Length: 263
Image 1 (cartoon, rainbow, N blue to C red):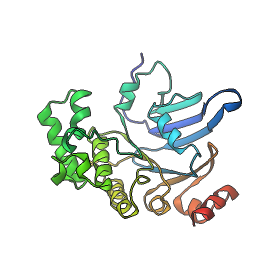
Image 2 (cartoon, helix red, strand yellow):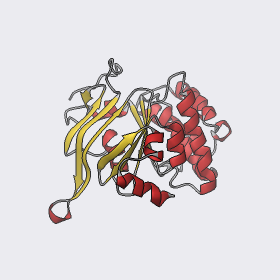
Image 3 (cartoon, rainbow, N blue to C red):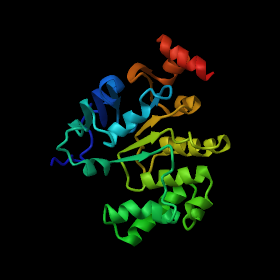
Image 4 (tube, one colour):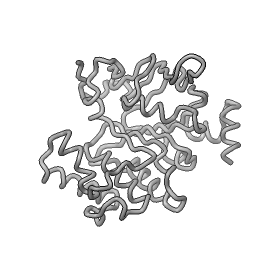
C-alpha cells in the first residue's frame, strides 16, 4: 500500500488536479456515463465552484476526489501524486480532505461537541481533552459555541449544517469539499451557511487560507466566493473562467441556456 505524503504542492503544482477522469454506472444498455473526461485544477488557497444542472455529475466529481467512488479511467492527483491508484492508502488521503454533504449526517445520539470530536479521537487518536479544546474553538468559529452540549434535533437545519462544517474543519484539512450544502435547507436558513462559507473563504482557518471545491446551485455565492467557475454538463466541462466570464458573458450556448433557466 502506498502512503501519500502531506508535503504540500510544489511550485506550479495545483493542490488537486483531475486528468481525463471518467466514471460510469451500470453496464450494457443501462450504462450511464456520469464523468466523461473531466480535467480540473484547484490551486492551494483557491476556491473552484462547479455549477450545472441536476445530474450533470457535480456530486460524483466530489465523491471521486474523496475516494468514495473509484474512477474508471484518468488520474486524481493530490500534490502531483495519483491518489486514484488502487494501491494508495485511501484513509491517509481522506485524512487530508474533508467533505460536507447535502444532508448533515450528524449522529443523532451524540451531542454536537461529541460529533465534532469523534473523528479526532477515534481515527486520529487525539486525547479527549485536546480534541474537545479544538472542537470548542471550531464551534465558536462557526457561531455554535452555545450549542456544544445540544443534540442535533435541538438545532435548526442551518445550525446542523454549520456543525457539519465544524466537524469537517476540525482536523485542519488541506482541501474542503462542499456538495450542495444548502440544498436541504429552508430558504430562510441558506444565508447563514453561505455567510459562514464566505467568512471561511476570506479569513481562512487558524491563519491558513481554506482551499475549497464547491458544487452549488447558488449563483450569487459562486459569483462572490469563486476564483474560478466551472460549468459541468453531461459529465463534461463545457466552460470555465472567472465568475464574471462564465456567469455574465458565457461563450457556450449550453452555459447560456443553463443560466437562462435559473433566471
